[in-house]
Image (cartoon, rainbow, N blue to C red; front, side):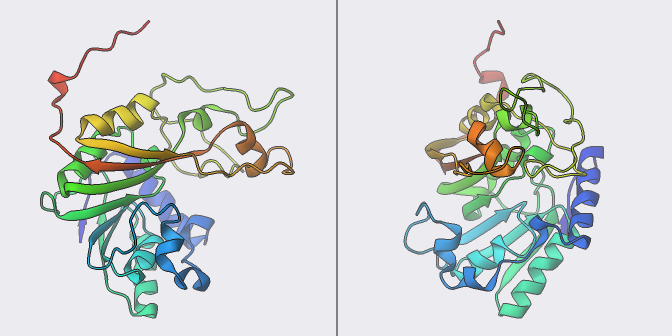
Length: 271
């Protein structure tokens, strides 16, 4: 099944992720065998999903690649995975077939999912990917629409500061080289584990990441910054940079109410 908008950013990132699969890059690798020993613990080490997800209708959003969907399906959920990359979805189908798991794949963009009815999912799990769309509000609007009242939305995002900071260390640490209030995609990057080479990425501010989620009809129940800092890591490496800048934020939100129309939002005055 396929449905998604055709904008330059969407088309660019679709091609980029298809190429990552062909190149067998790190985010296009199926889940390893050992992760299936206790799949729920693997995907939910924080315990946000409770003791069991068996029988729950769960959407893995922008989460193709043969990892997330297969693990949630192995844990007993009725899984649908949405991704803009057909090559990523093919990995999901291959893993599901090899492990005799049942899941549905849908080729679509995270900000345009008209194929789903309102309130159809109990849980939406959304790994790091909002950085690949220019606007985050349409994503939250769609997630709110397709999540039932009381349902969970668990998402992870690149932090704004991580997208602002240089990928290389200076004598003073990792300096901010990108403006916070910027428009358009970030400049290309080469050789960084904090960004994906070849993709178009966009910086979303904290007001957008959290404020727009709340205005879409969610209440934040928990927030963590997954720890990736390593004291003995070499400069410029992922673990070293993570001592200075948290690369990700993980949010647990619950669907509680109607979306606030744009016209009803309070005005925010810029200094």
